[in-house]
Image 1 (cartoon, rainbow, N blue to C red):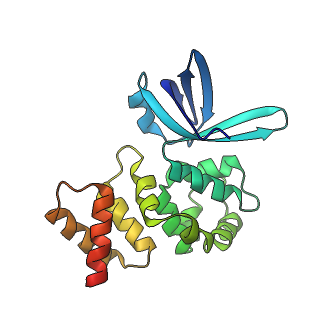
Image 2: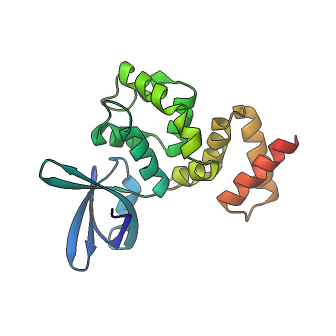
Amino acid sequence: MIDYLKGSLIAVNPGRAILEIGGIGISLEMPPAENGLHALIGQEVTLYTRLMIKEDELFIYGFRAAEERKLFNLILSVGGFGPRLALSLLSIFTVSQLYVAVLEENIAQLCRAHGVGRKAAQRLVLELKEKLPKVISTEELVAGSVSRAGSSVLNDITEALCALGYSPGEAAAAVSKVDEQNKQASREELLKLALKSMANS
């Protein structure tokens, strides 16, 4: 299996990116909403991949973060969900947003993804609600969320805490407090400090 590809980003189109590696242009299928990639054209980037074979064709799916790829693979384990629907979900949800929507059984939210109807959303919740907390860690929730350009670190940490069962108000207050006291902290450090703060409250 090809774990990741590192090369010069040559072109970005909706749902597709082209990396040049050793003089070879490699086309990768990607979530259509990876608009932040446009700013990286001409630069060296690393994309995490999943290779799939369909009939006689090879398809390489690319993701900005390993956590996105892990969620993509989890979605593919759900009956009736292929790469197209998985990419559709990842085009409008960050890792933590989809995590929260599944755990809260928010069918209406999941149906926002193109091609995902009510029955498919219910099946997604049924099959992933127990798996998600076991497969994706709190740190991965945050890392997968902030990989997208323009994503707010504080909002994503708050969403990750909500996914763990804290109320939105409690989570937002804890995140705001630790951010105010630790302006230079990384997102991982902020997450740990917020968890510690909430455990002691």
